Length: 164
Image (cartoon, rainbow, N blue to C red; front, side, top):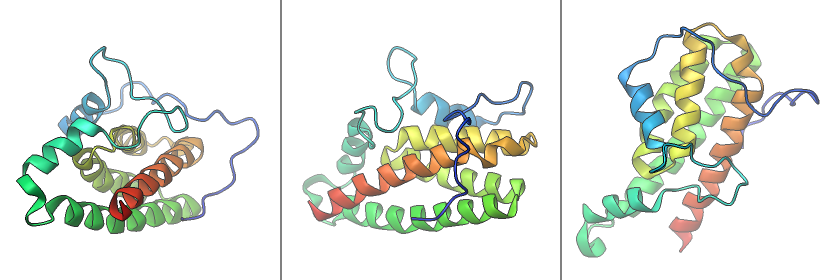
């Protein structure tokens, strides 16, 4: 797992995004994907909420009925490799104080995370991307650490599925 700067003792686990930041359709889709039927956010890491959304995984399985081609397995293997690369790049961007690189990595990770059912991670990516584009350097602290924590939780869930 990539190493991130330590969390300051007084830092909140996450902070709200800046007002007036530009939002794109990908941000809206990722945020909507992370909301449940009641419009609330998917629970955060450690809340007991599954790291991967079961209905999303079921839709992936429908693309290969009977698992004849091992489609879901191949998708999850590719995602696991991609997740590690993006988390490492995010850690490097944080260490360098590079908002643009952090935003680019979050953007790249957002859609693939949503497509495998990592909805809380996709929402965290959308938030980090939006805040990085708005020039909010605080996003490289607690919000990025929270994203990395959720990324680790997703990685563990994907690895468990691949083993099982």
